Length: 185
Image 1: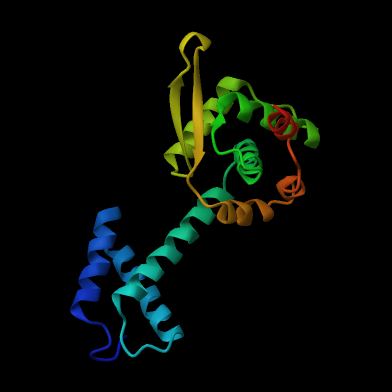
Image 2: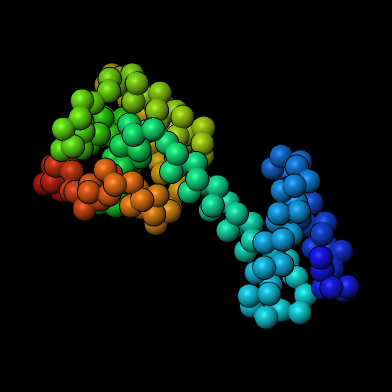
């Protein structure tokens, strides 16, 4: 329960609007209001303000991303690890070929058999649907087509998830051989 006057009407409307925007679920609105109140309490505010709602929304979203990525199957995490390693080493225009090469290398490092390019493409599409990355087909003229992959989730969020996986955390300091090739060309 809230003390009278601690939650202005506009804050309640904002929580309802943000929850409706996503799924229209009243439970989400109540959860957002609860977390907003916790944020306000932590900073010593007398009232819940819109800025507390925005902070709470960010915290809830971060928690959802963490949960979604934490429960991915191993090879999906290996694909994500490959993308993470490339971005960490300043490769921001990732093509499907770069991803496959890095993925195969880390599978080999772990002594695992890699999946086919087609299966990796499906895993990339699944990560795209989760909103973790953006994947677009790019026409390369006479060189055919490739996928261009962009990480949408912050490196720190991805790293936080990967560090909690005992198998994958051993790879986080790995420098893909592709990086050396790219730097020398």
